[in-house]
Image (tube, rainbow, N blue to C red; front, side, top):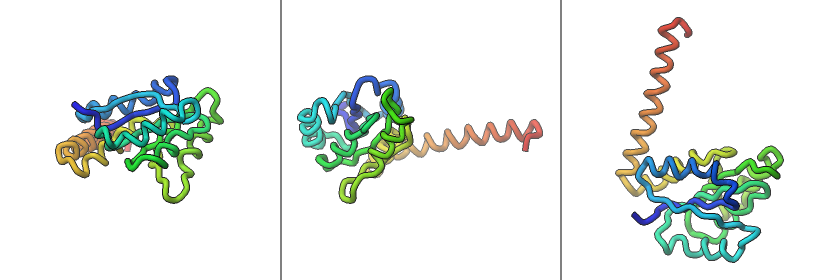
Length: 166
């Protein structure tokens, strides 16, 4: 199956966080590719990736980055595809705030959808929702996923309420 979503990160040290996006997308039956593309260490690779992703059939890019976190915004400035940024709390991070603000505070004309710190799973879900706008099968999987979450919470609420915890 040809990948629809590309998951990129500035360093393989981001993989423990970014893996969550791949896992949730896989559970929806969405093919992904995963690689390292550094805005600072491999700028030519980043430009080539961003210019060509849509030509290879990629429909959404999830870009994780820590520290200065330029990767999501730089890729978004080049590609015609939607980019979802995942701020990663890295070893040289200022409690993750530098990454959050670097990804979130994009100038008008260069949007990056931004999820919470280390929330690659949410980035994967958002990518699936974007694909689901044009793919009814994916959309049905999202609907089922959300129903399962709702059912789980309601079951937990009933358990607590049955014990007198209201």
